[in-house]
Every structure is written in C-alpha cells, then in structure tokens.
Length: 311
Image 1: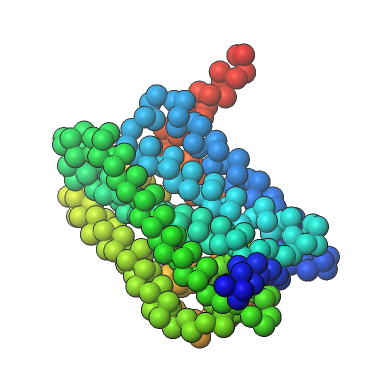
Image 2 (image 1 turned 45 degrees about the vertical axis):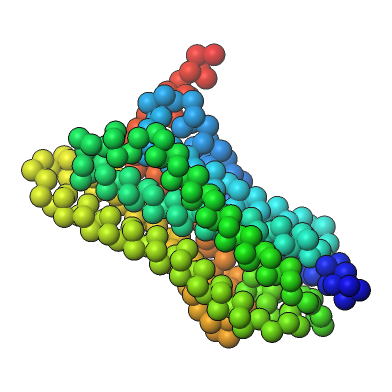
C-alpha cells in the first residue's frame, strides 16, 4: 500500500519541446499563434453549424463533431505546455498525467471512428442520393456519433487503467511536451510488454478498422463518380471527397506512424515532432480544408458577418 501511494503521488517532469534560446522562443510564439488560430477556427465552425439552419444536415453535424474533438484535443495538451514554458514549472502529478492521457487517447480514438462515419456519409450521399435521408436519418447519425465518442472513451479508460497500475521509479523525466503513453512507458519499473501488445491491438482496432471502412467507402464513391454523366456533378463530388481524404491522410498518416511502431523504434525527438504535427497543425488545418473548399460553409460565414454589420 505504501508503494502504491508513493507511485500514485509521483511527480513527473515534462521536459518540453522548447528551451529559452531566441530561436526556440520564436518557435514557441509561432506554436502559440497556431494554437490561437486553431482554437478560434474550431469554435467558429461549431457555432456556425449550430446557428445556420442550412447547415443542419448529417454532413455538417459530423463536421461540427470533428471540430469539437479538435478543439478539445488542442486544449488537452497546449495550455499545459504553454504554462510550463512561461512559468518554468514543468512538474505534473500522476493523476494530472493520467487525465491528459485519458482525454488525449479518447479523442484520438473518437476521431478515428468519426472519420469513418464521415466516409460512410459521403458514400451514401454520392452512391445512394435518393435514399440518403433514410440511410443517414438524424437518429442513425446521432447514434454513430455517440458510438464514436463511446468507443474512443473506452480506449482511453483501458489505457488509463494500465498506466495507473504501473509503478514508476528512477528518473521521472518525460521527454515530451505532454504525457504521452509512449513517453511514459520507459519510466515504469513494471514489465510493460503485455501492455504494449494490448496497445498495439487497440491501435489496430482504432486505426485499421476505420481505415478499411474509409477505403471501401471511397473506392465505391470513386467508381460512382467516374460513371457520372454530368461534369459539374463529378467536380462537386471530387471537391467534397478530396477535402475529407485530405483530413484522413493528415490524421491517419501521423497516428499510424506514431502508434503502430514497436516502442524500441521510438525516439524522443521524433515522437515530439510527429505529436506536434497532429495535435497542433491538424486541428488548425481541418477547418481550413473544409471551409475554404466548401461554398455552403463560406456562404454561411458571409451571412453571419453581414448580420453582424447590420447590427
């Protein structure tokens, strides 16, 4: 019991990604600027989809959930990193570390499944347009969204339970800017090979299965688009689907590289750079990819801005 209490009260040190050299100070300012842009973009997307009735469709409801997940993801990691850098207080308790891990893993998992749901939505819209309102009715859309959040949370609970069950000793310095599972495992005194196998299985379920749904959906979408008679219909379908595929490529590429390699292949600097990409850049790029290439979103934004000018 004494050892368990000592482990639970362990204080870790987040070494971070920046030092206080002029170059790193500039990079930190740049990251803080990207965080601010991503924060405002995703809030704007969620609010815009909520207030504009023309965007109350399954596609945009799913997009609002993606923005909400991205918003929560950047708020899970970046504020703590900024506070540690500015204050010099790099310590984080095991419960605090566990909280970060739970939300981080849960949101990554939920986004994996949501992107698969979004691919299915585009498949139904393009391949079965006359049955779209039946196959993607509001109840089913909400159910699949709730299922995405739930499955992601279950993954987070499994990982959190394992992390809190380990004993930690020796150097408690985490070579990362947030509590990532891969960075925490080397600090454990407990044998973690069984957990690493479990983590790999979870990654297969959370990444490979949704990717399979996405590939199957878009292979059928591509076949349907090729046989479309109207050039305008083909252009619109390609524009919508290419936006989604851009997001999928950015997200899954980084996530697979990060979590589907053996722990022995991980290096701290490499992990920090890849993590920074999909926890900072991807949440900023997602709204830009969808809004800049989507006339309906752009039109809704113009409408809101005109109303504010009139007021």
